[in-house]
Image 1 (cartoon, rainbow, N blue to C red):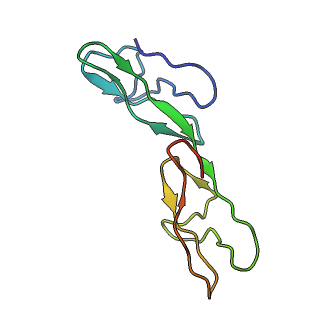
Image 2 (tube, rainbow, N blue to C red):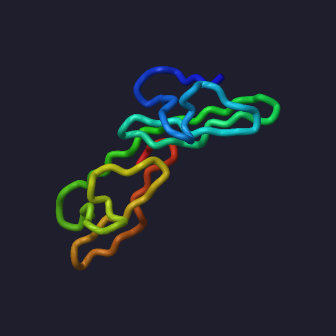
Length: 115
């Protein structure tokens, strides 16, 4: 039987073909639960051949903001930019520097949801 703790940020059984919707999981199979908006799913929920269940978790996405002022990066506006102000857990984006400045590294949101 698959069940998740209730509360914001915890996965739900979801609906759809690959979801955990019926609450049961056959040995040797997996399913994909659903996270609330603002959270990213970490791992599938699976049931081993021996009947041991591994549950997914939902990790809060990061909020990306930069200090204003000369020389500070801005979110940018490309495909891998930080433009929308949020960054999914485990992902990175590339901000933009003003002319005359060089970017050092990407902006990362760790798998734990930390920038």
